[in-house]
Image (cartoon, rainbow, N blue to C red; front, side):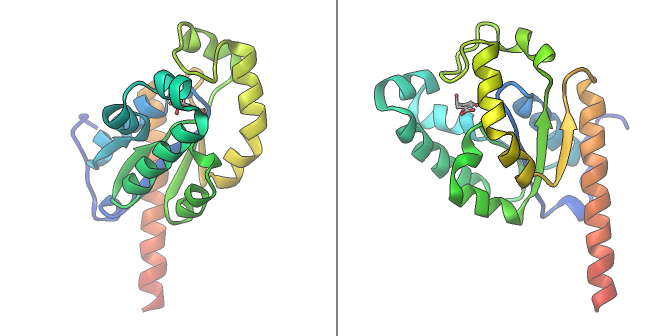
Length: 186
Ligand code: S3P
């Protein structure tokens, strides 16, 4: 692989959504995966920030429920098109988002607590002040994350290229087998 975008018939119409805990690497992996597959990339936190300003200020001035409404609007819009979509760690708490994910390829990125300390040092995330708050948040959501995921990849220690290739391989394989099934039904 020379790093150039590879777009195949099988990935053109797919929406791949990266979910998972804060600091699991959703944005970094999503960007690279989109490039690898030749698809557009949307980070819904970035959309909210570009439209409404910094997330900590939204939480502080307008509260979490308000942030969740803005987030839901950004997610709903992002899920209308083909592409790779990275959503904030709490986006999947929204029931409408949970329903929408049924039509997408959902990849859960996991990460071990030992790997997270450096990533959340100086974190500006309103709900994550330290490792303990991160662990609590993840424990509350772990079952939900797993129930929504079609594929899980751990980002604790492997190079990002390896993680991206693994997910791209899964996408290519599932799309190819879906095509085979459709052709088999004709
Ligand atoms: C949140 C995660 C953040 C951001 C907001 C709330 C959460 O995104 O959406 O601070 O509830 O887990 P990341 O998962 O990208 O850190």
